[in-house]
Amino acid sequence: DEESLIIIKKYGEAIPNNDKRENIISIGTVVQRQNEDDVSIETQLFLDMLMMVYVKGKERNEEEWAKHFFDANFRHWA
Picture 1 (cartoon, one colour):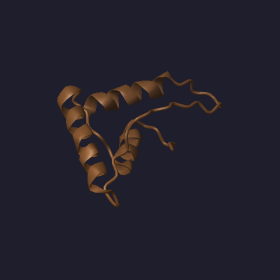
Picture 2 (cartoon, one colour):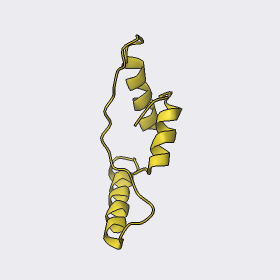
Picture 3 (cartoon, rainbow, N blue to C red):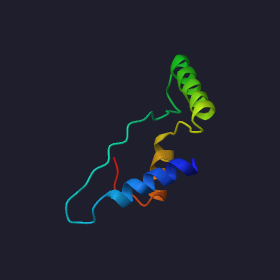
């Protein structure tokens, strides 16, 4: 998790500091914790296990992504 935070911080450093609004597009899975059927939850947990085993990463829910980008000094995200 610390490695992904370092990468996201590097993205922020690479964005020019000017008046133009610059964007970073991050594509990933957002894990939902509520109102999901058993198959969806099972799939999400399976993907989470794959991330942990193969790339030392993890799936995140929306609040975790928000904290991750905030910790990397991004203040505006959607």
